[in-house]
Length: 454
Image 1 (spheres, rainbow, N blue to C red):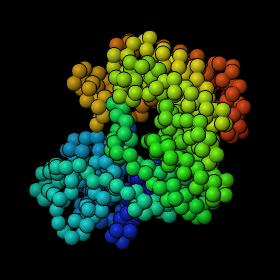
Image 2: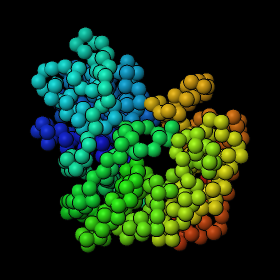
Image 3: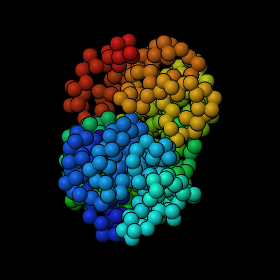
Image 4: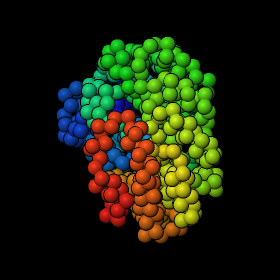
């Protein structure tokens, strides 16, 4: 659970550009039932309902849309986010929606609201998939428009939420129950990893360091927050921006703390950049390895320099940053030996934590397209909902048998977590040591047991 930044940006843009009255209902953050979500929406009696959805939640979206269409027959129902963006026409066919916005939504959603208010159609909105007055689905040509200068966006509408909800819920960081808020400081990732969605596109765009600090100081003033999750896809793509950001933060004199749960691009790190992040208050960060095999790195399009990855993690760990790694096992054509290369790389790193995920081909990604083209039968067993991506098979796109892959997953956790040296480093470096009492030895044993891998 984390603050729904996408909705906060859309709400702020709608208010600034159109003077719209907006309410946000965060189902995940508040753990609302579907009935409660519908009740709150009906209580507001909106002209337009916008819904964001991740792939694991798509059945919930369908139920919600059906209920809203029955209860608000005259309202405009619009969907966006990773799942609708991955297959907009398919989602429109499955659900009685009026439009699906692909990619980032501020400009497209504003254009939709203006056209709706003026009684016009949506044929002029690039990349939009929508339903005309006869019920036919229309696919507009062109790419959905993006915001080139992020500093022109209004601040996210945090006033529409109760931030305390997120301070008592499990969040994206390994450090839980924090008085924190989330930030996007950039959009777009120029790398072309085949397993990744491209909501923000491949062009890197960033807030200026001055704008980031302005947002931080506003949130501190309003909510007393000094701890921030930065959720960028590639925060450190521009080295000078990181250095300027650190300098601007230190000038405020605030004792800020930063976490990067979505990871930084590790092979771009230098000692200067790591020092700047640590000096600004970075205390926990994720580092995405994905694979320890150079061949797999090339095949998936990540092209990570593994030696530089290990060096980047070491520099961060030595500056007191708690280091969390991400990896994936079970890519197409990946051998058991290559999976163990990933385990070997993790074990010789200075990571405190490593998460060994199973590869899942999500719709709308190049990986999904490749599997669909070369081995479509593998997609029939893929499930997105109620899936444990860490401790269950999920899917297996590799030639390795399911039984052997499960054993490799168990071996990965066993070798990594049962290292006495690593256990000592976790106990020494974990930023909130009292939380370790909630993670007893029994849970550690579950991580490496066959019982967990069912």
